[in-house]
Image (cartoon, rainbow, N blue to C red):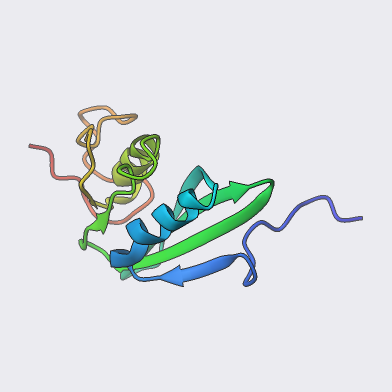
Length: 127
């Protein structure tokens, strides 16, 4: 008996370039999709960010891969609640989101003494 649900499949996941994330999420919002959350993975030389959205229990995922150190546009202009997850991903994976309206500067969850991103092998530059 299957005791899990596969939420990311080829059928419900689109791979897009970082510069298209705002237009894609805006289009989905116009269709009635709500922002669920985001997830992130360190791929070595790059970072993968997956945006999870749903409408009437239909899950859609948008997968963005960017080289470490390259900014990814913030989707908080489309979904204002995204700023919290973007701050969390910034803090834990070192992803810099361009246009982030409220930036906790890596201190949403981590203490000031923490100098490395826990889930990514790049350091945090504290100002």
